[in-house]
Structures are given as structure tokens and as C-alpha cells.
Length: 352
Picture 1: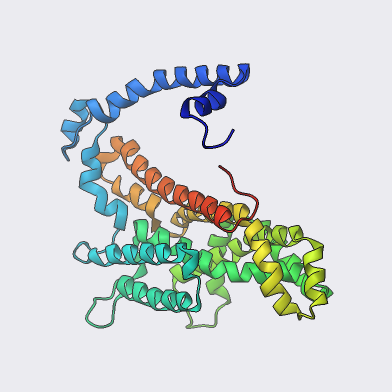
Picture 2: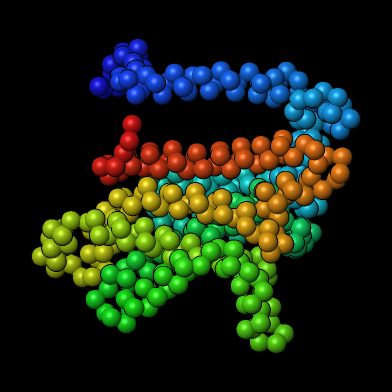
């Protein structure tokens, strides 16, 4: 049935087309009727908006006053209060760059320059120390800006490395192929939390005396190296799905390896790998919450920090709901954008 069918017919087909669908629809409706009324009463009817723990306890519902009181800590961690306009601008700038990059018509060389200049401007906003901005150590960073910085900087640096690893794993040169296989399997064989511990604790031991690397950069390097191994396997799956006839046709035209790969093989492979790639992107965004183990306060860590005061600890559900909503928003947008790309690039994997 097409999208032009009447709405009632589409609903009937989706919810009541078979006895199993009917049973599942009835069960879902019963579950909603059982859950929604008490949830609505807790979240809205009995909720307290006053930033007063005593008033929240008396109300008996959700304490949104906790969010109103601690939202700056949740969003920005320990970043200096009077300088929080800087991470706000940094997040807005990053979102602007992402929106600019979302349109395929903007995929030109100037976009790379925009990311380079924009990345430098965002780093200047967060760190400061130049042109009159006070310096703020990364140890004071936290919340949403740190989560986004670790996620998107990590993905941006990991993706080119992943493409090279995927190509290397399919190389006809035994030494190159063996090195790529060892790298991918080694990094995929350990959990990210172990990588972060290694980057934070063990890596400094191998540096020359007197040389130190910022803890944030060490964590970022660990995320990049770890994520690249998983993205490489997604890209390799796309490479394997490219029809052999396409490669033979490129060979018949006399294209060299790099021109054949860049103009014929990779564009098709990446289109077919979009679902797997976006799935790993989403996983990386969520996995940044593990940096709490090395003393960095991402969005989830900042939420825990906001609950440090004893009078607010009973209202942890409200804080974690806000953090979950922000994670859900970013992952949902990434998922929907992947569907848009599939349809736009006509990869043959689009879903309605």
C-alpha cells in the first residue's frame, strides 16, 4: 500500500491487518492506559516548579525545581559561572556547523575549511587564554559541551582512519593487510573503559620525563583509536557489497587504484554502509559517558555532580530524565538524518 492511500486504511493495515497485529495493538493500548495516567500525574499534575526541596517533598510529584536550580551544572559542569556564555556559543557554533554540513549541496572543499576555522574558534571559546578571554582548564569543562566535543571530534578524526583501515584490510599486500587486521581485532577485543584507563593512567608512563599530554586529549585519542576500528568494519562491509562489475569497469577504463577507489568504489560503499556507520556514531555519542571513570564530567557526570548536595539527592530521576532526553534528541536526529541520506543518495536501503 502506497503513502497515497487513505490514512484510515494505512492505520488499519499497520495495526489491525492480522490477529497478531490486533493482539499487539490491544496489549500496547492496555499498557499505555496503565502507565500514562500515573506518569502524567507525577510529571505534570503533582509536579513542583519551585527550587525548594521541602516544597518538592510536600508536592509528591516530579521536582522540576531541581532542574531549574541546577540546569547550569547539568549543562556546563564546573565551568566558571560568569563564563558560561562561552560554552553556550560553542555548542551553538557546533550545531551550526553540523546543520551546514547536513545538506549534500554543501559537500565541497570549502566545507573542510569551514570546519577547520570553526573548530579553532570553538577551541578558543572553550579554552580561552587569547584575545582577552580568561583561560579555563579542561578540568573545569563538563556537561553538554564536553559530550559533544568528545563525540564529534572523535568521530571526525576516526572516520578517515577507519576508511584507510578498511581499505588496508582488503589490500593485496600481505604486510598492510596483516597490520590492519591486527589493529582492528586488537581494538575491538577490549572494552572502551579499558582504553580510557590505558590512555589516562598507562600512556603517561611511556612518555619522556617532563613531557605530559592533556588528559582530555588522551581521552580523545583513545576514543578515536577505539571508534576507528568499529567504523572500519562498517566500511569494509560496504566495500564487500560493491558489485564486482563496477570494479572491473573501472579497471577497463584504465583508472589507477586511488582514482578507482575514490571515484567508483568508496562512494558506493559508503552509501551502502550508512545504517551501520550511523549506528556506530550513535554508540560513540552514548559511550562518552564512560569518561567519568578518568575524572571528566560529561553530560551524565555533570548530572551526578548536580545531585551531590544531600537535599537534592532524592530527585535524581528528574535529573537523569533531562540527560536522557538530551541523549535521545541527538541520537534521534542522527537516526532521522541517516534515513534522509539513504533516500537522497538512493542507496537502495531507504525505509519509509
